[in-house]
Length: 514
Ligand SMILES: [Fe+2]
Image 1 (cartoon, rainbow, N blue to C red):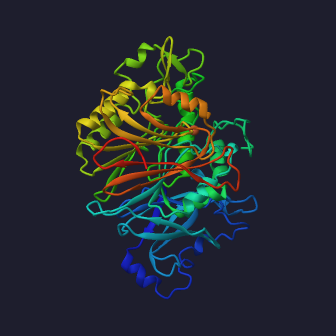
Image 2 (image 1 turned 180 degrees about the horizontal axis):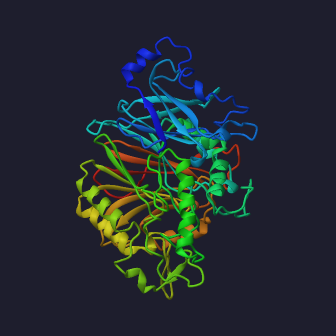
Image 3 (image 1 turned 90 degrees about the vertical axis):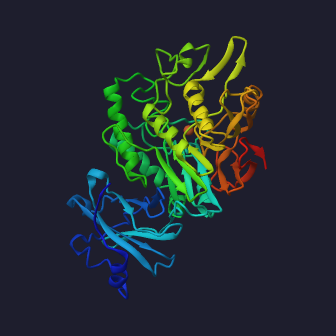
């Protein structure tokens, strides 16, 4: 968190700002850079909506022609308004930033009203950012009748245009839930419609450059400016299929953790998050409440997970294994012991009827029946079956009737029932799952998904041949999930259609076609 130098209380602000045409001028006189080009080219964002606060973000991107940053610290002002016309300021403040944090700005805007729309902008010298819109969460005890959000993940820049974000930006939503693979570190020339233009990042500067490239996409910026985002990450924010301190190449863990530290730091510098990393560690798992209606836990499925089971000794990426004894080891964990306890306790204590888990991959089983036995993919939840069983059994024991798991990573739209023993009709359905497709990243064919469904009766719907996202709407009576999709690769002017829609009725675990 960068330092917020000054936060005025709201009453004083109303007085101070009343009738002032240019309220920022006096405060920013000492650092009044004149910009050759607008430094707010990466846009603005907000996130982590609470009843009384949101996190506001921007990052200044000075052009070569601007000498201002070379002078060191920049003072960036933020203003928050109660109206879209920016006539009614409710808060303002200043943040000092510099090159050590890539000129990023993180503001925890506090003292806000619950369930309210706000507009905000940043200024620095003679430059002003675009105006962003955000919305606080309802008060914890509020009788909330509706929650609406978008579920999105997996946006490989090279494999398509971010047209999905244009649709997301245009919708009325409470927030965007993004569950990982915000950037991709690697390239895959297949289906490429544009290029990263740089090599695979390993250093802080290279990860910063990759994040900046993604944020230069106008559609992505629009989705950030339109709604607060709630985020967790998956693997590609660092490197494909990493697990804790191990990457696929078995790089010396100390060396790999230096890369992970760089990746986490660049991630933080580009996101509306409040807690910066400490070296190679960063707390991203979190909890959000929506009145008395719903509670959302965002999970970290990468940082604390056990290494892959039955790993290839030459290259430890996820792979398909048959008859792997290690899978049954109860010590192995997807979330790590601390996060598992935190989640189990939260689920047990929560009185809110809808319990949502935002996490990065598919929880329902996806293995295949082969003559040699069941084959499973080791990087997803199938690779951590005991951890999955503990989570689902714990939720069932806690009486969490409306558990809904929301995921990404696998580049397909999925609707599935969740049982403590997957695909076993004698094991009751204890939860429901939706995977929200992928913004651009390519997925599996229809034939492969049909086969997967044949061997996994819990999966009611699986399409990997189209790209997209999902819109979720929750009321006290039901949760509805609408899968939005377009062809692959995603073209710039792509339009989206509803591929399928499902509901979960309150008090009845399992997905049903709408
Ligand atoms: Fe992905």
